[in-house]
Image (tube, rainbow, N blue to C red; front, side, top):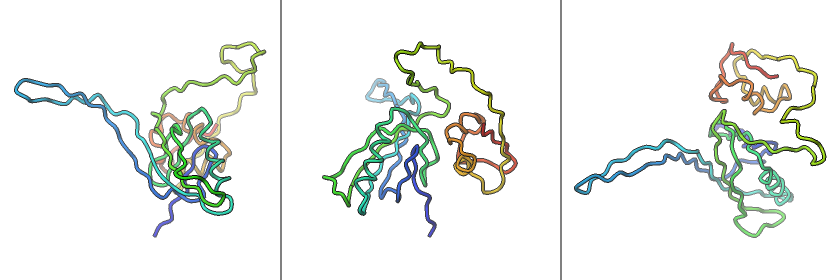
Amino acid sequence: MAILSPMRFKGFVWPHNPRVYTIAFERKLAVHKIPFGLHYLQSLGQTRRVLRGEGEFVGQRAYDIFKQLANVFYEETPGMLVHPVWMTTNAWFAALELRQAPRRDYVAYSFEFWEVEWGAGQPTLSTRPLDQPDTGGEAPAAKEEQALYHTVVRGDTLWELARRYGVALNRIVELNPSIRNPNLIYPGQKVRLR
């Protein structure tokens, strides 16, 4: 029996994978009526994929672990979701729910993530203090980092490369728009890391 890697979102790593999860693929359809009680369906295209699940945290620190997960939920940005079965994707943490009154040693919860289309521009929130002028999004001149590339060898994954080189996984995805599926890289492929 294979042991699956732990689920991760941003900096949070589940101590054990959720007990139950479902992945919903949604497509919007329009119904057009035609004479004599007939109809035809028109696809309006796929929308988001939604990952829902349920799990428990158990042990002396169960409630503290749940609070850490809740802090990640409160962050107002999408992030990289690494799931043991679902492909790695950029997602919004859309919902987090307690399934019962929490105890210090046991917390039952449910969650929901909504996939963000790769390459879709996301609005960014300004973090500048109010007393500083807006420079139109331009950061102060900084020393330009030299590009760094890695040649993929058998067994490499983007997650492992991010950890090895100390680069955020979503940054590697941004730097490599030709990689359509972050779970699929090939030996000999050059991956830009900086």
